[in-house]
Image (cartoon, rainbow, N blue to C red; front, top):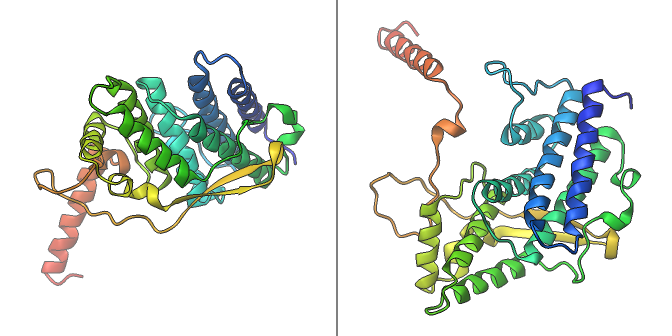
Length: 301
């Protein structure tokens, strides 16, 4: 396949970042290890998505700002142009949510959850590389640097249950490990990106979950969206592949800001962030609606 010049540069950057991520994952040095893994995993996929989009001649620059688009927009364009599945998009959004919290504040991932997501991203990277460029990851990396673990990968529901129990233990009276518990809660909330887009982990969400755990609520009550998350694991050793899957999501309903509801955690959604209307565009849309309403009222439609 003949690559465009920008495509080749972006693809090379993607592979370079994945090399850094996998080398950090397998490092004996724990100092900054998780941070390095998450930063490079997220960057590797932003570059790979942009490489594939550029090759397909999809615009990856914001025409208004003149700057390249961000990760979330890349994923949305990937759904539209690169045949990304909802499950694949969820995996990428979760990595981005982990990275966002790690870069701007902090979170804490168990080794099992880190491995499951790192392995899933490597699997997806290889899948997309093959789909879009007829290339394989093995052509660029020796097998020894792919993320490995001394333990076989566990089912994601088992990992989530173990993490929930660990958080509950950290919150027990007298433990004085609340900061670590909240860091782990942030990671659990970030994983909801598997099931829904626009996930932003807030202090209010963390506090609500903390209170629910202290009230000894069951995990499925506190994190209903994670109850439908699954993993498809195949292969052995270095050839293992991990893909996330999901069933129908948990029921969700919109509530008003002043509505008193019984819930373990309430996800606040910034509609302006989800629907990217500028004030001028919103005003034009409002005027057009008013014009159509008047025409309908006077029988002109």
